[in-house]
Length: 448
Image 1 (cartoon, rainbow, N blue to C red):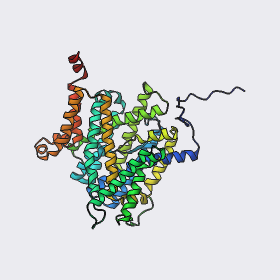
Image 2 (tube, rainbow, N blue to C red):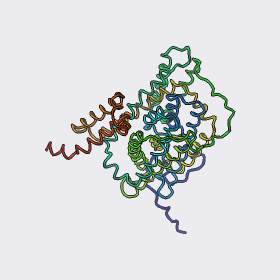
Image 3 (cartoon, rainbow, N blue to C red):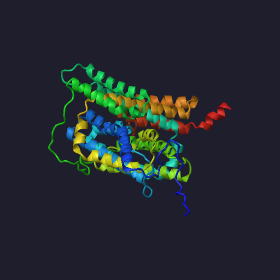
Image 4 (cartoon, rainbow, N blue to C red):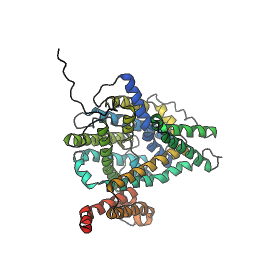
């Protein structure tokens, strides 16, 4: 009997053991899923913990935010990997809470608490759904130069918030410098894990740093068990649990960062496509990108209505794919199941809320610094000639300097105040306007 050839599948690298459409046994699927979750779960829960610490949320509210972050990650990962109709990239992509929105969320929280933070997320998250069919055109406007400036400003604007955790007392009678020492230990462990070059150490580096910091805090009496609430065994998501508030002045910074998150999703999904042996050009590739952005928009919108913060496609999974040699999107179902279980069990959220601030501060300092480095890499891909150098210099000047002058900002019209109050949107807008006003062609003509 003639043996028919298997259906055509994407070409896979010799290092890939399971391709995109390959079926993987349950045991290996669980092990790979755990590695993916381990690589991104700390990043997913860190933004709500940082916001909760800075804005003094209760432990109950913080635990709920952590649970919703994990559940949103499960939903987003499932949508990305499943790909039904126009929704999802159909790749082994992971979704998690976005660090990029920390500054506008912080400003909204200071002005109106959780109601305004989540209200602005509800209103602006559908922008991704609207933009998903047009992403090929957006990339022509939001060039690597503009996105590099924005990502660099995201990192530099967030770095100071890490020091709030590092400066927090480990215990009431502890010296102020003890928190800084613990944060440095967390960073040292993460750096040491990266420096080993070993796959398992690089994946677990952030978790190892957190564990080391918690052990040190425990030795100094700064680690405590969460309060026993005697509540339900499972977290039940609630629609608008903190109410709804809206302010027009926060629309520009939220909307601008959503535009940038589109570009980040394009880069992350393109990298995953390459690892999965798929072409990164042509109509099919743009459909995958459009579906990935649409899935992010749906996830962020659903998360906001249930009391969670915006989500984005993570890049961490690409490293795990390279290390494990598994690109099968079916692993995503296992990842989604693990994340959903973590999110549905309130005890997980309660224990995460008691992570000592210096531990979170050290982790955040490392992560925010890496965000800034990602911005620098984008700028280097764009090239730093005379034109680019001037645009970057002015954009960073406006983005870092203007938000330090509240009196000047207060004298501006309300809509303009909201746009420029965030260094990310003011600096990014400067880069966008200068890029459009000074096209590359003009410089080329002058130098010929």
